[in-house]
Image 1 (tube, one colour):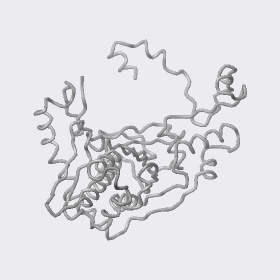
Image 2 (spheres, rainbow, N blue to C red; image 1 turned 45 degrees about the vertical axis):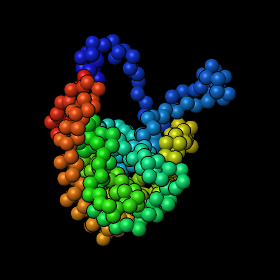
Image 3 (cartoon, rainbow, N blue to C red; image 1 turned 135 degrees about the horizontal axis):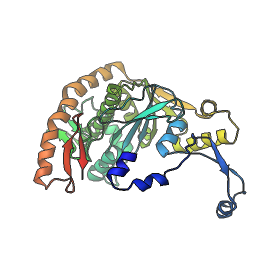
Image 4 (cartoon, rainbow, N blue to C red; image 1 turned 180 degrees about the vertical axis):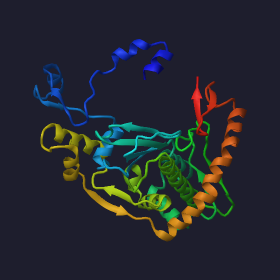
Length: 334
């Protein structure tokens, strides 16, 4: 980041960067007496290098080999694929060299609105009187494509494959015959289509994916899990311990404490796969047609309309000028 610091007129910040970078799972040292007193732990207790939550979460899911994609779900979706190639491309982040482990790389994609869209819809259409299982059951009765109701998941902008802070969500094709269940399914499908777009964006950057290892809130919905597999065309793996960052910390600690020789051995011993959800061939083929013929085209066609709407509302970008990137995305510039 040296050139960035110079451009900002703050080159002295480089002196505050850490001068030594340790791999995750390395022994940092022993707990100091002051820290031991504050924490109520023994002085000299081994302290092991951790990392950012997503990096540690990948370890906790056993996502450490090229071709594996870690999907962390919550209010948003984060897609982290381990890759042999340190390539980068507009709309993706990375590839980060030496992450999550030395000798590997990983690249990242993201969706800004996923679980947050589902939570918004529940509050709007169901409130506290109806639970998520009831809404899922209504959606499960309907065919792929929600009987010609298609949604865009970009309620809070788009990150991957096109970075556009002005992108917004949409429901297209609504008729008076559509019910709450149709809208619920269309929004669930939209999130899955967005995940497919992220996977495609990462593949276009040179990062292939053979399976998706999933964690977070989406794992509590069997309907949504199957939908992720059907729409992406990839097997979705669910692990026994869904709290991936917590297990990742335990794995790294076991290596630093000498219980396991390395992270790979610790993952083999401590990460347990619960089940593997395969895409259903006939349903995946139906979703493939909807994705290519409707979702992708709708996303592209809606973009200039969303920008026009933002202009009517006064920009919607807090006074920032939008500059088109080489990759067709948009990045905010002060």
